[in-house]
Length: 228
Image (cartoon, rainbow, N blue to C red):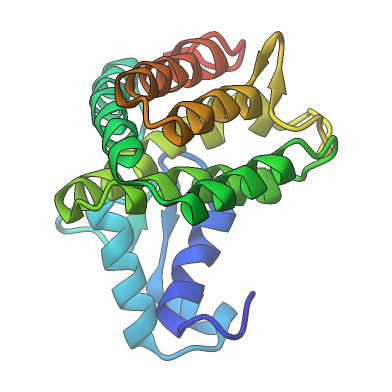
């Protein structure tokens, strides 16, 4: 755990880490007192982090029950989440192409170079993918798009963490960087960066929409571990 992060963010990332590692499964419950004990923190930052996770759709607070629950996932919910994310991130990519600076594009290329590393752990892959998408959101210069992105990205990530081929239990913990079958996430990112660099907003939108679609339809829903 990065000590330089605010306590709230440490608690937030700790719970996300439990989900990425499949230590928490859909339907499992997590309790504030347990986190306080495990992390050695006061209740306030942990409670704030849990509230954020609920707001972002990563956890649920069931009325009349103790603790917080990882949502039970469904095919219908997944379709709604990824359809919304596809439209939103397409718009974000288009706006990023319009407003980008040379320095921002250079930073995206650096992230993409790191993604091409042939051995990335699940944690590293998750962090780099999130960094790529968040940088694009900031480049769009629209706080309303950024607010909408937060919840959709984290909620859709639940499906990726639990059913995406890169994150499946029983597979090697060290895998080729985002390589699932013939689909290469870093190459899709690379094409999006090039369109943004060229300030081709319409192409950036199309490529991002296809990228999100591929994540949904190929990397998650076609996984042999997804049963709907």
